[in-house]
Length: 354
Image 1: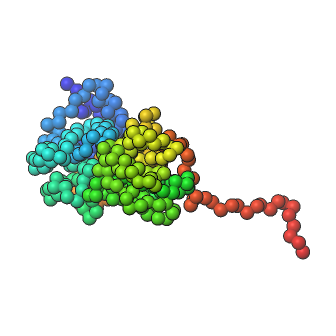
Image 2: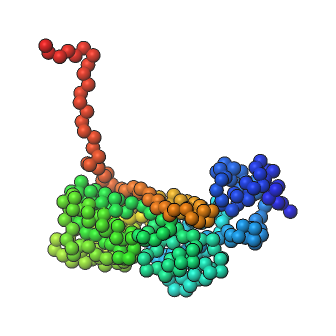
């Protein structure tokens, strides 16, 4: 039977390093961790999870709480978590926070079936989040954040990037716009709405109140929201959707109404899910660094397990605007970042008048 000592010899590291590598603990370089995993695979080493749990008082399992799995953003985020946890030889239990899934997550906390929880769709009214924090469970919020909650949180600059979309519209002459937003209790919806409306105010883009429509972050909501806007005699020339799923609905509604995208109407989404690049949508959107967000979230959770009393941290990533066919492939020109013209350099034989 292959033991961890055999893996240590094959990898050229100590047995303690092997244990730390498999538990996901800190203090192991990526090079050493890679050697350990390669040696384990070559030797056919299998971890005894029960023995490790007894020795470390950890289950080696992380719980991930989600909902709205019809939104393709979340399956992609879950895939990133799965890869990251697998690299650290940790397991994942997935719960849908709607219905019985919430009860299962709470029971898992109470029975110490998981070492910590990652929430991807948390809100201030989430009972699972409240219970987990009250129980002292290590918690990380990813994508959506909750102000005032004492736990580690990971998100992106939703306000700044949404303001950038408004600037993109203005710079391209699309000065009458609509906004298809999402659920009021979600930080992503609030921040993206706030950022876009601040951006349009700063760049003289007209967004009538009737053109700010809650699409519920859904395809059907995006479809119906665009239909409402085009019932008006003076419809928008550009629409910003606060997630890609509602943007897909807006694109499909435009097709049904014989509105030409991008000639008559620009549509921009948010998230850059895989479908956004499909030829049938070819959607301009804001790309979030999903893999990086997942890696940082897992690392923060492992650090919290090692040091429960460390101060909470908030890691905010930057995103990027990905321009595609739904805006005619028109590049974004940030006029606020233009450098002033350089003064002409004097040649070597220049002489001032005397």
